[in-house]
Length: 245
Length: 291
Ligand SMILES: Nc1ncnc2c1ncn2[C@@H]1O[C@H](COP(=O)(O)OP(=O)(O)OP(=O)(O)O)[C@@H](O)[C@H]1O
Ligand SMILES: [Mg+2]
Image 1 (tube, each protein chain N blue to C red):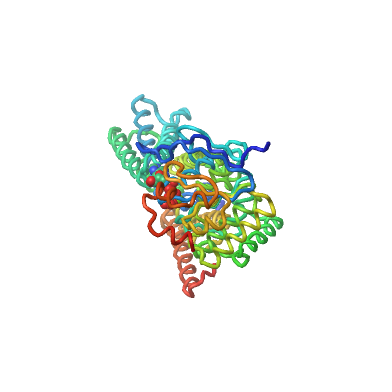
Image 2 (image 1 turned 90 degrees about the horizontal axis):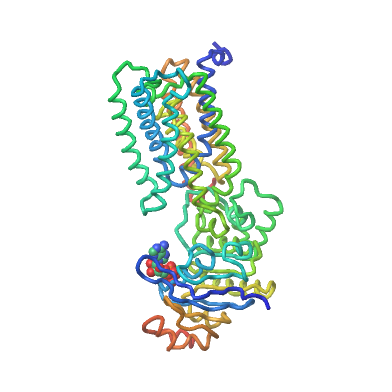
């Protein structure tokens, strides 16, 4: 049997005195679309960083497609949480997308790389950004370029950390269409951190509710219930109105 | 006197060769120094070289050796490892603590300058310890010796090799160290290597052309190039080209105007910098970046 796409085994991460993740365990089978939900500071990004090999857990371990995180890198596409980016760095969208192929900053982009980058940008609705300077992009445009960068290597698993941040409403539904299309074409596994519970319910095949520890893992309709969410978020507020929408 | 005659003068030729060597090694280094916001690094390491030279001079004096008798009596042999260790120390401190790179540099900067002043003050004036404080600070590009050229050539080769091999990875790690790490790049190791190369380049250059000149070579060409470049490779090549062109122009101008050469080179670089800033400012005015 194939190893799971993502195997998180009793992972505990501690920064200083506090446990950021506490004994987190779950397996994600191939071809699933996982939504990771939880409040700010819940450790969602930290969980991804463990899977990427950026953070070594204090206890437990992670495996991606049966491999240790860093050796799995060529098969992993990662879209980081939107961060402040150095706008003085002279670079074009093309070059950033090509880093997804080369794993180095390109001095010269080959014709084949350029065509592949153009096609991938086209696919995420950003074909027109190919030769644009990164410094001049809006945060939504930048997010698409990062998405293209992660997809260009045709990863077997895509990890997206709040990819819809800064992307407009229409683009957001484009994003889910695009990910679902990529998934049906390639059979890839997708894991996405999101604060949009309605989107999680609608698009994901699996949901994990996280706040330091796992408060629920399973089908969206099972996990996105008041009970689980109350456990993770403390109080649910108006989440149920969102969910029934 | 035409240009060919000018550079047939041995001291002018040596100045030119040293200047070109320094431009070629400081160009790519400066790109990463500027992009990683380590503008202070050149100054910091140059002052570490000053501290190291002081220490070396004091040792030579203390052991009663006279400079130049054997090559190992050159204070550079103390200054070089001293600067290298300082560079690695800065890399370590800024990695292990939450201090920013420039803060870590500032600490080492102050300490090495104090150390240098202390050491030189302990040496009686008119003692030959192979180095002159005034030259070390303000530079002697016209006083470059044949042996200095060997050091410059060796260092130039070393740093070129490093940048040819590591440029792509350095660029990736400089753009976003976290993304680079997810792709298996050893970002910390790269950082240490970059700082080590910076230490050697700055120590050798500071001895040959002085502290002020190397700090300028490290920042001004790269900063000027950044303003008018669309890509990192363009910035890198342009940074080298600006260093080379301003060395040539500065030396020639200083000869005809009969003014200090090192200063003229720096002022020529400043002209280019102002030019690049103007180009940038004018092309940006329309709202959309043209370059
Ligand atoms: N390098 C670090 N050092 C110390 N604490 C950290 C570090 N990185 C994250 N933390 C802490 O770990 C906790 C979880 O952070 P994480 O980024 O994983 O949260 P998150 O669930 O992604 O939150 P958000 O929804 O705001 O993105 C936070 O309380 C944060 O302060
Ligand atoms: Mg996060």
